[in-house]
Amino acid sequence: MKRNKIALIGGGNIGGNLAYLSCIKELGDIVLFDVVEGMPQGKAQDIMHGGAIFNSSVNVTGTNNFADIAGADVVIVTAGIPRKPGMSRDDLIATNAGIMKAVAKNIKIYAANAFVIVVSNPLDAMVTLCQKESGLAPNMVVGMAGVLDSGRYRTWLAEALNTSPASIHALVLGGHGDDMVPIRSKTTVNGIPVESLLSTDKLDAIEKRVCGAGGEIVALLKIGSAFYSPAAAAIEMAESYLKDQKKVLPCAAYLTGQYGEEGIYLGVPVKIGAGGVEKIIEIDLTAKEKEALSTSASRVRELVALLPN
Ligand code: TXD
View (cartoon, rainbow, N blue to C red):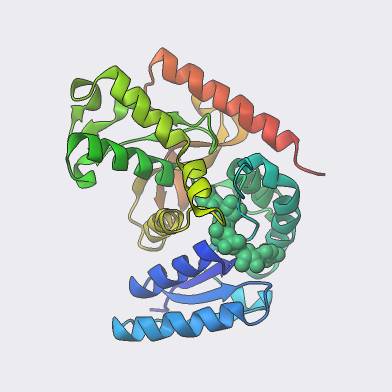
């Protein structure tokens, strides 16, 4: 049985963590690509040395040659610039669109059968562009946002309830922006609705913090943005594909009428298995949640309209 091949496009903060997590979890042989000469090669050696200590048997290669991703089973794209304090994710669109266009064309050449997970911001526009320019089937191109945002929701609920995040199931849907939609009506502590455990004011405060969590970290770091948790979220998605786990995860998926939306990528619950996005799952939402999701979808359309031709 041939080993999986994981191609990481972008060897920066998230890319390096993706490589290390993939190595420790032995998800497959890893190719770390970046345009910066020497950096991916250096990180690959460092990661291999760490992997040896944890008795990992996979190979990690750093490269500046896109051709080295040939035949990858999974491609995770983090290429692009992150936010600086005071910047919105949308401020990145011009620079990162140019990068994503080139990356997508190379994926089409070298890894047209891969499951592609896009991480670069502004996420909803970047995943749209990646699918369009690569020409891969929409079910094989997905955006990472909801798993991260739901993890943030679970974190703050766990703190408020003095309960392990392992017992908290939370959903954040919609675009990966300030108008993302925490789905309170479907968030539970092992089946117990959070609305029966925390006051409306407390839940409002937690959800406000979740929607601003990215910006909160950017302001604290001063240079760069969150990278440990985005890497963890992308690995959760990649592992569900590589091991055909068929996990139901909130991801930016291409809608063809689900939730009343057509022709856009939006964060919704999807089943990820060996067939990529195998199913888009429609859940009942409250009237308030439906309205917020529709507003978020409109924002995504506005953002996508800003993409350069
Ligand atoms: O939830 C989410 N989707 C977001 C995504 C969560 C956090 C961060 N988000 C975005 O991911 C962030 O706003 C950025 O747009 C990307 C990557 O964030 P990261 O923190 O990893 O940025 P770095 O450390 O600057 O790394 C980006 C790397 C860097 O090494 C560049 O040299 C490289 O991208 N880069 C390229 N790699 C390949 N090909 C090209 N053309 C290229 N251009 C730059």
